[in-house]
Structure formats: structure tokens, C-alpha cells
Length: 210
Ligand SMILES: Nc1ncnc2c1ncn2[C@@H]1O[C@H](COP(=O)(O)OP(=O)(O)O)[C@@H](O)[C@H]1O
Ligand SMILES: [Mg+2]
Image (tube, rainbow, N blue to C red; front, side, top):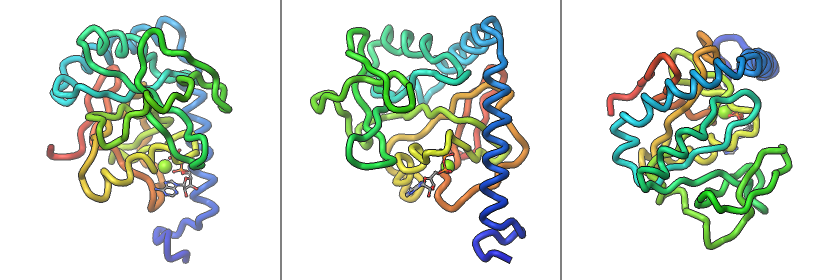
């Protein structure tokens, strides 16, 4: 038995299962109709704007939706309306696998990164150090009943949240997802950072006491 996978899974089968779960969850969210997407986004916004952790945050990282993800535009508009600062992830130009967070305004110049996702054009004056953010809204492909999170496979948010996970310092994450992205159990790896809270159109899942 592989010591790192005591339930009998080998590293190889774990990776295959994770890849299959990723593919299934992506297909489900991509199949949502424009009407379902609109309703989902409205329902998440009404939860989001009442959350204490959101109301208490002044510097909020979000992301632009892609691949059937929940539409984040209404959340961004609401945050701007509340005079809160919004930041978007940008692929780090030198440090592979890492993200930078840039201040995002309606007039921010955007371009497409190598994944075809729109991101602000890198300008060092707009970079916000992660420890100065209050809240990081994370995208996810699938989540399970324990708050384990599966991303697109780059490990970007695992790296971003590693310090918070190990020391409890820095911005808290908040996952955003459609209900159909929930699975019973995700095989996790040592580096995966489980989320303390996730909001979906029909639920506010919470796993930590805080
Ligand atoms: N904190 C970290 N430090 C170094 N490498 C990491 C870290 N977190 C994740 N990785 C690497 O990123 C890769 C993708 O991680 P994975 O969890 O499969 O992706 P995702 O979280 O996007 O689904 C893995 O090869 C993993 O080793
Ligand atoms: Mg991961």
C-alpha cells in the first residue's frame, strides 16, 4: 500500500479519480442554461451581500467566471456599489503556479491570459499583497461534504491559501459554486486546502467554528 494514500488508493488512481471528477463537474456546470445561470447568480448574490465576512471586508478578491462557473459580475457590481475594493487574479509572470491580485475597476485594461481567461494587464502599481486582502472568493470545479476543494488542476489557490491554512493568518477563503458541483467525497492530496465556507444558490456550507 502507498504510505501517502493509506486507504489503498495509489497516487495514480487518486489522480485519475480527481481528473474524472473534474471532468464530470465541468460538464454539469457547462450544461446549465442561461436562465439557470442567471437565477443561480441572483441567489448567490442575495446570500453573499448578507454575509458578515463580506460586510466586514474592504478588500475582496474575486474572479471573472469562465467554463460555466457562477456569474460573478453581479457580486463585483454590488461590491463596487458598496465602495469596497475588488481584486482579480493574474498569473504571476515569473513564479510558475502563483497568482498576483490586481485592483480591478470598471476602467481597468484587460487582456486574455494563456488559459484564455480575461485578466487585468499587469501593472505593479495595482498589485495588492495577499496578506492585505480581507477575503478571497475562490473558484472551484467540485467540492465535497467536508469542504475539500478541487480546482482546474493548476494548484493556484492551494498555493495562495497555503499560509492561511497552516497559520490561520491572512485572508479567509470563501468558495462560490453551483449546487451541481457538490460531490460526496473528493480524494484529497497533502497540499489541498479545504475551504471553511462555500456559498451556492441553495446553501451556505460552513465547516469551521469561526
Ligand atoms: N502549496 C503548494 N506548493 C507547491 N506545489 C503545490 C502547492 N499546492 C499545489 N501544488 C501543486 O499544484 C499541482 C496541482 O494541484 P491540484 O490540487 O491537483 O490542483 P487544483 O487544486 O487546481 O485542483 C500539484 O502538482 C501540486 O503538487
Ligand atoms: Mg488542489
